[in-house]
Length: 141
Image 1: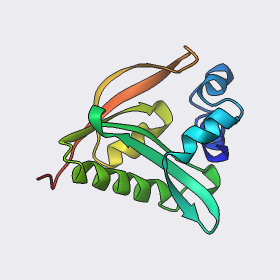
Image 2: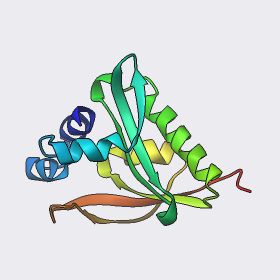
Image 3: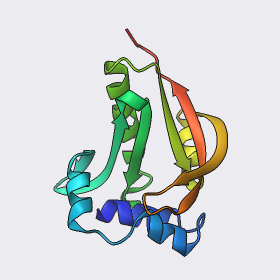
């Protein structure tokens, strides 16, 4: 939860107003801890520095977050590669995602193409400006 909160509040701070950041990632609580225990994590020593998840039935990369203190060391790139391998293993033809505007360049460099610009509705009902992107998965069955 600390990684998610830091990634949102520090990495996206220049791209979104404070109200949006708070709606996107509020203070950690037990329900959020339970949910995050279910996602894929990359661990550095005994500290989680990034996580992500794929929803196969939706062909969707749902999340990918890296602790800003671990930024620039390839953690996000390795996590994305692992999630894409998982998608290929599950037979997915493509992955779609709603990128935050601050992460658009990261996904573009990884081969994702823009489908459209729009908004993503957070669980709180708050809307977050996003970029809908897609990438064909190679190496499928």
